[in-house]
Image 1 (cartoon, rainbow, N blue to C red):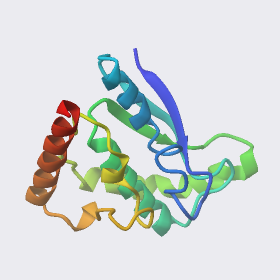
Image 2: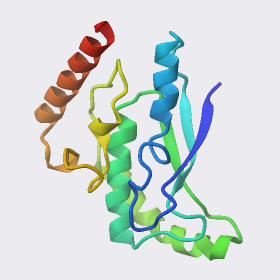
Image 3: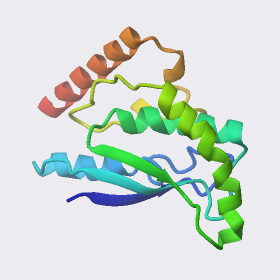
Length: 164
């Protein structure tokens, strides 16, 4: 069993628009589960993207996908995200989205996310998308040891907050 969520920004130029209430809203599900002592469910992001009828340029899309990969990889309960949409209608979005198949395939084959899972209190600011907050971290500029140190820091901070 799993929970299927749809996460969209409703903007092809600002993936962080509405974060964490549009993209990233799984964190609220996890926060509520944690609050009530319910194990976090397996989550499938069965629709992910920008608008219902358009995608950004390949370069911008890949930057957004890179950020989303870091966000989702920190939570082992997230098992995957599917980009909207390769079917008919919706402004022929399939013709636009298909241009992402090769770059996403290459990205997924050449990137490994060895990220320690974040447990404890959910803090959406930890993974805020670029340009959403001045405190956002550019995960692509960090070395694996720095990422592990940040994960440990936030895990310890979260555990401390739970005890307060």
